[in-house]
Length: 257
Image (cartoon, rainbow, N blue to C red; front, side, top):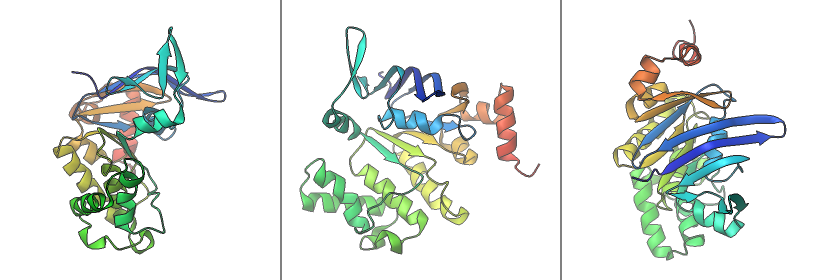
């Protein structure tokens, strides 16, 4: 079975700072992978490389068996044109820490915008699908609300619906609850749990260890640009093998200790 995501020795530098130092990583169809680790470990950068929001400096990155952002000829990589990259991104949904909704559009308009503009979907069809997705994330009664009229958790759920509107093969979540008040986190995680149950392939950068324990098929601990440890959540979170993993989890799970 072809992995949905396959990273082979990925390197990424920002100037002299090497943020990713040879990452090898795979995600199978319908699998949920949670990336955990301290801030600055390269988790979000890896996520952004997967849909070519950041360009890699070395290695190969495949989504659904296709090179991301490049074509290969004679053993060398040549970057695709922006139009070709945009075509690849249509199959990859991404939800950011900040919601990035269009403030002048209602929730319904935000969700239907990309299918109409990018996929040239019929407006009536896109509107019906957007309503179904808002209902799916528990916001059927908010379709006429503007982002400023919604809580942070509601805005994030609209952002998830917007990503789903493109019917992606893969969903990327970059710390989707980190900007939310604690009482709003549960609703967003509930939507993500249901996506996992529905079989969506997902990569989630998160500090929500309980979510990772319950939902992930695989937990990947990153630190200083490398994968230190990966495996089933019960093993990585409950019985980590590496001292760096143990130290990180001790700080996250017992912050007042």
